[in-house]
Amino acid sequence: MAKLFGKWDYEGVKFTDSSIEQVVSLKPLSVPHSFGRHAKRGLQKIKVNLVERLINKLMRGGTGEKVGGKVIRTHGRLQGKKLHAMKVVEKSFDIVAKRTKKNPIQVLVNAVENSAPREGVTRVQMGGVNYQISVDLSATRRIDIALRNLSLSALMKAFNTNKQLEETLADEIIAAADNDVHNSYAIKRKDEIERMAKAAR
Image (cartoon, rainbow, N blue to C red; front, side, top):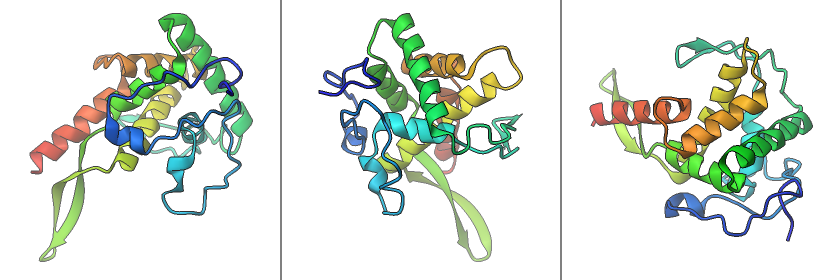
């Protein structure tokens, strides 16, 4: 059986959230690269390996948007550079394995499960007035939000600091896997989204 980057086994990876397990692919691949073959088909992202989806989230452009009170200006340094993003994830998994003494694939799964919000808000218009209402989030949407926040946190913490991106990504994955509210941006965002949804019920 293929091992991720020739190092880590996919066997024995367990989920505690069955709804997420149904829409996550952990197909054994040594190189997580599908070459975009699922890009133009609806809901085909569930066939893309979870590690590759994390890599894809890292390849965001420099939007300059204010996210969580911080302005992100990455200037698109990782945009389109998938091999570079793959090396970043491989190095971060090395750090995760060294610190936790666990399979980094399992640590990533735990991080995604912990940082995936169950409830969110959407905007509806009634009589010319916009309202925010609470909605249950689908499993695919939950995973997208979790992976986006994990990668965003790594980019924010590596921006204008001495820390490398692989170090900040490893820090965030470990903190999210431990459900650390104080150190994990993804967990904070999850709590914030669920708190807004509760207020909009």
